[in-house]
Image (tube, rainbow over all chains, first blue to last red; front, side, top):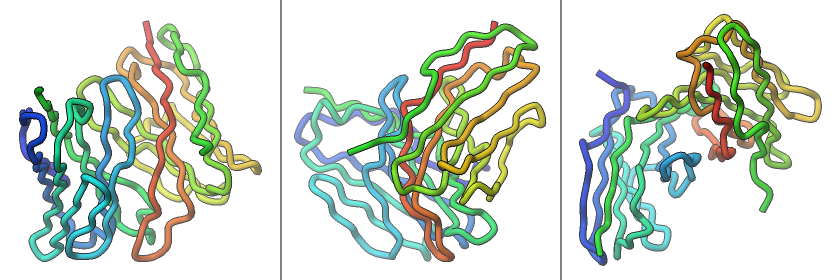
Amino acid sequence: QKEVEQNSGPLSVPEGAIASLNCTYSDRGSQSFFWYRQYSGKSPELIMFIYSNGDKEDGRFTAQLNKASQYVSLLIRDSQPSDSATYLCAVGFGGGTSYGKLTFGQGTILTVHP
Amino acid sequence: AAGVIQSPRHLIKEKRETATLKCYPIPRHDTVYWYQQGPGQDPQFLISFYEKMQSDKGSIPDRFSAQQFSDYHSELNMSSLELGDSALYFCASSSSPLPGRDYEQYFGPGTRLTVT
């Protein structure tokens, strides 16, 4: 079992809808949680990060973290075709012995159709 | 805003050759990370450096080595290249992680290595 699991895709939503991406992690010591967007052949682009339980909103994006359930999610409101990409969930352990190393999920492919 | 710079962007090598990938972090970032991403795979952590010292090591083959220099740029040296080393190699940079949190990592454009 991977340390970081994402909901299996691909996920297809109509333009203007809410896209919901989910991620679970196995290590309770995880401290930092990131969402990256990656277009095919390009580098991961950081779109959200969250460190504390609860919700964090930035524009059309909302990240939700529940450490007790070891669950982090990303909501994309008013989805646009340009949001079509692979979304990577990444988990960090907050320095210490694993100094900034990120462990990634396998990614969820999102397609937003007009 | 300045981003992470990687060079070269594309590299073609033959088996058993060596390759050197370079990474220039975002100004004032002192921590550098290297990741390898195979086709259809998620990025796999290779190695990281903080203040010119190796800070963590992942699934990096013994044939690979890396270092961070006084100007914080980093180089990944790959020897005895194998066909399986063909992948995208990303460098990321951040401010120094602290106990209890990681600072956000920003990725460079990557180097696409093809081994023939």
